[in-house]
Image 1: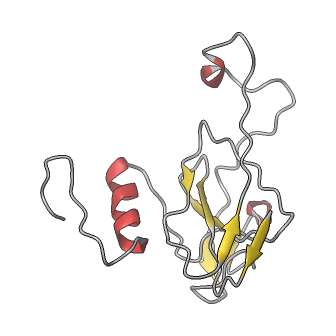
Image 2: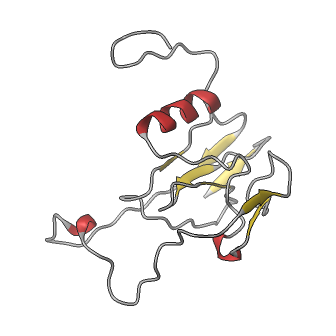
Amino acid sequence: IAQQNVSQPWTIEVHDHADRLHEVVMEPGDIVYYESAKALHGRNTPLQSGTYVNLFTHYRPLNDPDWYLRDNPEGTPEPLIDVGTCNLVGKPDEYSKGAVQCQNSAIGPHLSPSMFTATSADDMFQWWKSVGPRDETVEDNDNEEL
């Protein structure tokens, strides 16, 4: 909705159906659609400066508690799983500008320049630790410092 004095991009991170990380830079007025019930998503990096206002809207079918387990309706495009070989062609900190190009261009310009994929909860935790704030001590479930 609004941003002020943001010195560097604050990406929304979405993992697609093939576990690939997409880092999307949003400008005021942008809308990003993703299946929040099926795609891991969030902002793992802290906002470096300024202010940032977002609005998130969630919805689901009425009277169907198992909606997320059902197949998509007929005519829904299949998830984009195989995009062929992907290569970093831009800068490692260049988000939403096509820094990664794949053989299948349908993947779009938001694939993360890190080319990170997450196939387990541990992968996600390691990613969070690598991009999160450095000045805090993080403990795991056994109260051990990491």
